[in-house]
Image (tube, rainbow, N blue to C red; front, side, top):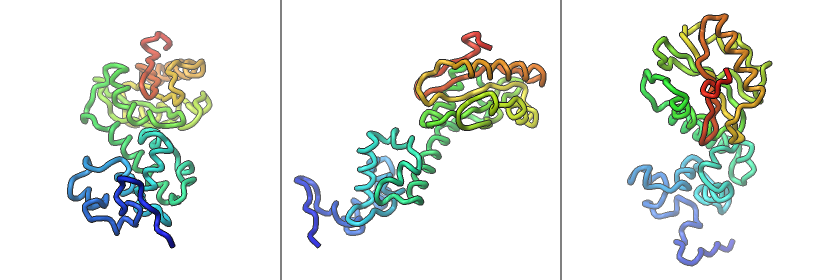
Length: 239
């Protein structure tokens, strides 16, 4: 079979299988030798992808993904189903990429002190935007606080379209009672990029504020996050 001719100025070995490349240019060996910061986005992705398909290396496949989606950020928002459309990415490789992106989001979101004090909606945004900004569906969370407003832990209540039938007071306050928490902050994302609260957001907030009064666990705020902005219903006087 005739071998593909390399583009002008491009090393010819890049169109051969990665094991045939010079050792110093193979992504895994390069990572061991020079560290992760020395690798391109495509090379790091290629390590996760592991192998390519016929006449297409893992680096070729990674480069195609980055070109198709425009950036690593946009690639990180795709589902396993989206990725499986590309030749050479089966279910196992697609799931590995999705899992790696999710781990990155969680690591960024949890890079905080053991007892961070949630003193403002800006603190909430700083902590949780890295976790929620790439998601394509709404996630509703409750942040459990102690008496000094230190974050005890966060709990995901529901994932999907936000409505009052899914966000029931019993599900929101059960973890707060079990912790036990002195107060809570409500939090959810708007994948649309519009941080303005909907009428449903306001109705849910007021329902949960009233439930908090009954349980003796005050709701300090409801923060709506997008990738680059946030809205505090408490600051807006909507609670």
